[in-house]
Length: 440
Image (cartoon, rainbow, N blue to C red; front, side, top):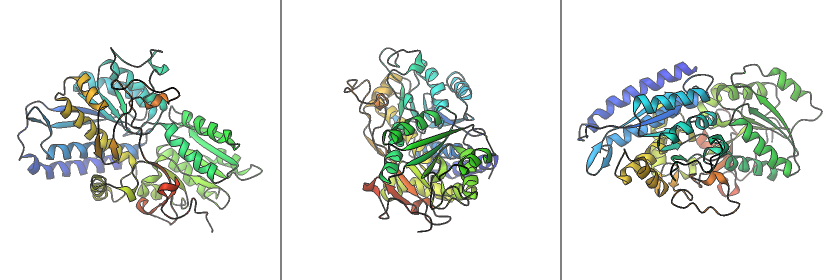
C-alpha cells in the first residue's frame, strides 16, 4: 500500500473517530483556551511513511481519549487538547521548518512523537531556545538526550538558565544495540554484515553495534544505504560473491527502503537461510505491513523496543484493541510510544497546574511517576537530580531508563507479531529457544 493510501485511510479513520466521540465530549464543559501539542511524523517520502501514519493515528487517538475524559484539568477548568501533526518527510531541514511553524504559527505548548533521529536533532535547538517542553518518542540517537552534546555549539549542558526542555521515552540506540549485539554474541556468531541507512540514526547505530561485536572478536562488514534506494542488486551481489556466507545480516534501515531491501535479500536466498540469520529493520514488528512487503521474510528476527504482548497492561491491551480495529494489525512500539508521549506530557501539565509555564511543566516531567501503555515512566537524571555518577552514560539525562527491548522472530508464514517468539533476553523468552533456524 502506498504512503498516500495509508495517509488517506488514516484521515478517514480519524474523521470517523472524531464523529463517534462527539457524544462523549458533549458531557464535558471545556474552557475557552485549548492546549496545543505539535507532533512530528514522517508522512511522505523519503521518510518512513508507514510509521508516520501510525504515529499520527497514535497521537490523535491519545488526544481523543483525553478529551473524552473531559480534557486536561487545570485548577478546576477542563481544557480541550489539540494535537497538530506535521509532516517531517524524514528530513532534518523539514523538521526545523516544522518546529518553527508549530511555535510561531500554531502557538504550541508542547511537542511530542517524532521518528527520525536526524529530524529530532535538527528541531531540538529551536524547541529548546523557545522553551517548548518536548517528549520525543521514536528517535534513538544517543545525543538526543545526552547532557552537553556537541550539536548545541559545544554548550554543556544543553540548558537555558538551568532548564532543559527535551525528554525522551524511546530508548537510546546504545540501549537497543547492546541487546542485539549481546544476542548475536550468545549465539557464537563469527561473521556479521550490517546494512545501515546513511543518516543520523543509521550511522551511529551501526558504529555502536560494530564496536560491540568486534570487541567480542566477531568480524563485521558494513554497507551504507541511501534512503530511497530501490535496487539493491549491486550490493547483494557483492554479498553473494563472498567466499563464505555471513552468520547474520542486520538491516538498520527504516521505512520502505529497509522493507524492499529485506525482500530482495530474501528472494535471492541470502537471508533468512540455514546459513545466515536475517535481522529485519525497525518496521518488522508491524506484521501486516511486513508480510505485505517482505513475503519471503519468514524466520527473520527483529527487535521490538517496547512492551511485548505477553506483558500488556490493561491500558496497553486497550490501545492495541483500538489499533487492531483501525488497522487489523498488532500495535507496534511506534504506536505505543507516541500515544504515551501525549499522555505523559498532558499528565505533567495537569500536575504543574499550568500549560503556559514551561519551567513548571519540565519540573513536573522530571518528577513523573505514572503507569502508561509502555510501563512506568520516570526520569533518574535532570534538573531534579543532576548528580550523575562517574561513568554513567550521558544519554540517561531526561531519558526514561526502563524501556523493554527484546529480540523477536517470526517462525510461521504471515504470522501476527502477537504470536512471534521472544528470543532474547532469556528473562522474556517465550518459546524455549534463542533462535529458530530455517529448515530445522
